[in-house]
Length: 124
Image (cartoon, rainbow, N blue to C red; front, side, top):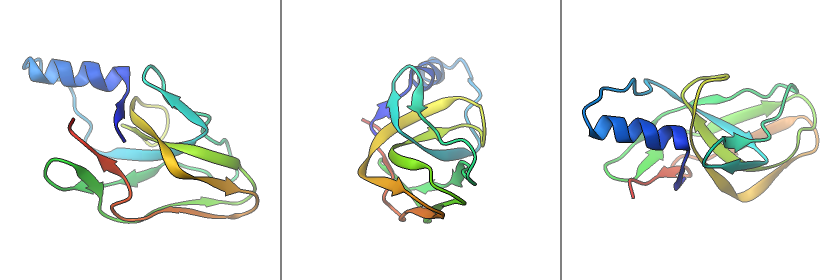
């Protein structure tokens, strides 16, 4: 996930200048159909059982998700092509976003799984 949002760039800039920003204590992964640095993830599904999922990371340097992240859908939600991290389960601020390696077509009820170590946040 190499693309930081404008919000995250500002947050890191303040932290580097000892301005004590409120860093997130938890992060949540979302699915969507696009993304940009100014808005983060776009096109999140509405309804059909979709909800952002809490994700934890580990590592030194590059951060990788420790556990599988599962999104459960109760009905079709279309083709999801991007992921994004947020500082809240709903609403909140976008932190980073990236295209999925493979789009996830949700044409009926089911689960989309992001495997452990599949999400990588690099410090560069």
